Image (cartoon, rainbow, N blue to C red; front, side):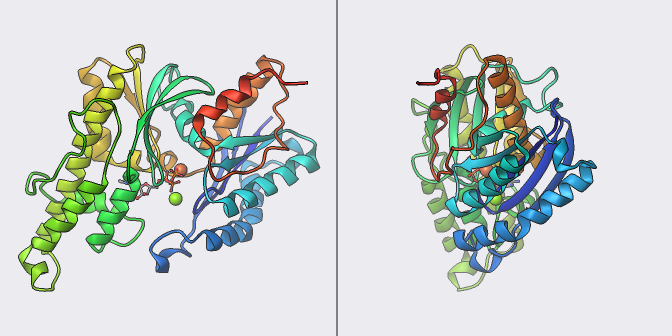
Amino acid sequence: GPVLAIESSCDETAVAILAPDGTVLAERLLSQLDHLPFGGVVPEIAARAHLWHLPALVEQALDQAALRTSDLAAVAASCGPGLIGGLIVGSSVGKGLALTLGIPFVPVNHIEAHALSARLPGVVDGGAPFPFLLLLVSGGHCQCVAVDGLGRYRRLGGTIDDAAGEAFDKVAKMLGLGWPGGPALEKLASQGDGRRYDLPRPLKGRPGCDFSFSGLKTAVAQKLASLPGVREGGTPTASEAADLAASFQAAVGDAVADRVGRALDMMPDATLLVAAGGVAANGALRRRLTDLAAARGLRFAAPPLRLCTDNAVMVGWAAIEILREARASGRDPDGLDTLPRPRWPLEEMAARHAPASG
Ligand code: ATP
Ligand code: MG
Ligand code: FE
């Protein structure tokens, strides 16, 4: 039967219902606007908004799918990593529902859900095969992960300072684009010349596949401050702003492509490069990665834009994969006793395969 999934790890309140084959039967998503005046997510406000909206979204999703709760086979929710208040709300609602209905509760790692989103039916012809290299680029993360199989993740490298989305958001803020800035910055960059300003490509050419964005961010700030109009206390001209946005985006694309190239060197058995997370919605970055993969005879895949940023469909899909595997190996998939947690490294997912003690 269908799985109902809840996402509440940050500022998206989302519910989805998926059929066992991954068909999306219902999808409800609310991006909280309550944080706009603060220029960033306020955890306490996020938790309250999740609590306020979640019950209605669950009902709307059931309506949309024309299902009753008694039709559900399992309930899943993000249990980490993320903001603990929201995670407590989402997992509690999910557990309550599962407990009442006497069906399994599947605790899902939010990052694993991003990782597996490329395996959703329709994203890659025939389904994304293991092993693949995952570039996870989101608001809170930037890392290269070797995905050897379900639950088998190896972090090859990651950011030593800011996450990619964080860099986009900070640069967008400098350019007066508001928050969250990624999509607005991409739009502005599309009108600009990415070769106009010479910006650094952090860590390019260095061994390993770590990332760094804070120096690039500082370079943008310095370039901006040096513009004549800005030096006189004003704002950049429209073309300066667009060219700076485009130059920043080009620098990110160059740096990321270099780092991902190194990660691919470390994973010679991969035939597929996958990008996931909010920044994977960026068209320029997707083109860079498509070219990088093609040059090495690999395929590139990324989920459709709405499934790159936070959503419940990916949570439901991860739950389906976890349930399927638990069933195949005769394990009880129920995780009613799993507590939500702000940190939950991907490497720990291997514990799922450990034989039950006792
Ligand atoms: P995490 O998943 O690491 O916990 P998160 O849930 O906040 O963090 P996502 O929702 O996956 O992150 O992604 C949001 C981030 O993606 C924001 O930083 C946003 O600016 C960025 N982003 C979204 N669309 C684009 C785009 N088109 N170009 C660049 N960045 C983008
Ligand atoms: Mg978000
Ligand atoms: Fe996310």
